[in-house]
Length: 182
Ligand code: IMP
Ligand code: MG
Image (cartoon, rainbow, N blue to C red; front, top):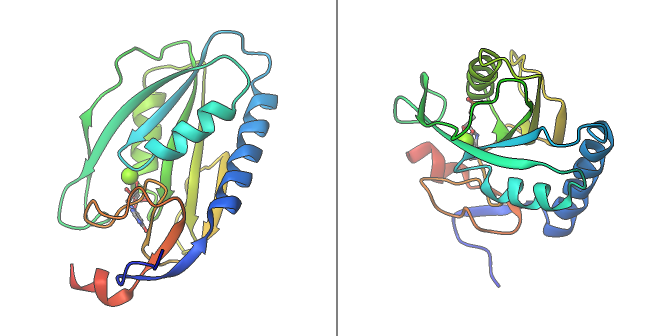
């Protein structure tokens, strides 16, 4: 199948993604092997839904999943403040929580969510993100990182541009002229 004309090229292919997700899941399964029924994966919608679905199915220790949705004020993803538009169904006090995000860019979203969840007194709080952009001035703790990627707009595997390209099974770079317009 030909690549969509808005896409520059494939950055991470499906096999690479699947292999890395399996590794992350193995690592999490080892690190939380002692947790018997208190592990919660918290996925951030919409971007993390595919990553979380794959990751969760490879984690061999018992766990539950819950979701939050956030949105940024302003037009672009990194222009402003973060706002929770859908909260967790369950309290997380006393639970071992892994916050699962799609991508860290400026770090604002993950920072905000980390602080918000920490305030609810979980037994432990870790972060897992599929990708992180290489850029300066970002200081957010990522405990489980899938891929470090260049500072370009990427889509696929849950990640979107204006809600498109989200369900591609690989990560592709968007052409610059496509995202500099919007
Ligand atoms: P941050 O708050 O600047 O770290 O931005 C994080 C959020 O912006 C992520 O949760 C994504 O929803 C979105 N985002 C940042 N970079 C990209 C990208 O390259 N593709 C798709 N979404 C992105
Ligand atoms: Mg997101």
